[in-house]
Image 1 (cartoon, one colour):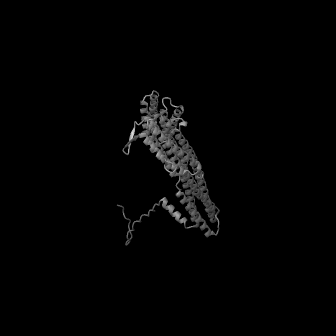
Image 2 (image 1 turned 120 degrees about the horizontal axis):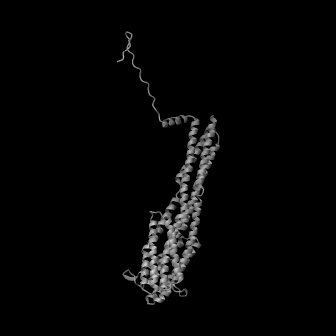
Length: 467
């Protein structure tokens, strides 16, 4: 034990010294808050905070505008150059397959020596369908329903063409087996290939609708930030005026002008873009969908009309307790769906057409559909009375015999003309909508940077007065 030094008589021993207090360690955040709080008590400090907030608001406004308008411009570009062309390609696949089936049945009815024009039409349809399938395959996602439909069609198309060739080979030899092969090929087309093509068409239309949905919504977040930035700039200039009696601060004024230009460009540009996209859908896509459906119905009706003569009653169906030819019933259903000037697909197409160039071809198709139905009744009457050759002449005969095939060709040509017109209208309107967004993402970023620089320089000018 340490010894205690001697103490003077009557003196108490000294108490040990207390340890020195340890200073509490502070975080960088708390120190920063204290410095900011201390700086806010002086006018230069307040100005620095105001300048930083204004610059941040303007930069955020420009960044959000660039981001949102880049997404919308990309979606509008997809509408014009990707999803709508793919939707049109899917419709072309359906039409080509249906027309090939119709051409095959027409050539079969002509006998062993198939007319070269009919053969060429069939081969052209198969080639077009193959080309469009290749296009669809290259643009369909690996896991999408489009990819599954394309894969199924690529598998079934060679099987279908093989059945058609067997039907032709037997037909040239006058063997009844040819009709069975043709009916089997038609069943493959109607029950497997055309449903797959329709599935592909619907999938591409859904993709088109998604692109429209991504391109048309207003960029409300960017608009809100723009209004907030302008409000902040207006408040800063009013504060500056009240403290200095100076009407204008050149930097803040330039920042306000740049932010105003961005906001007006954003609102007006997107409004025009939205209008163009709406026009492209209302006067383009909707009409194209109806016209494609009408053309497909006419193709199906023609194919069923031919197969009525090919089957010769071999396939029947029950309708209201009465046995009727299966293909003639299907023909009547397709013609009812096709309609006339006031009903059905043709009536809807006339209602959607917004000018004479769009209405006139459809009106021509309506006229030929009426003649087609009248001639079909005559052909059916001949067939029902046992005059098969007379019925055949009324369906695929020469033009001087007024066949139904002439009416079908006229309907198909008129609808093709209407489709070309509506496709041009869609393209023009979609280009106008896409063009209204051109330059906006880059322009917004540049102007926002200039506005932020103007705000910083304007505040810096005030700060220089305190030095």
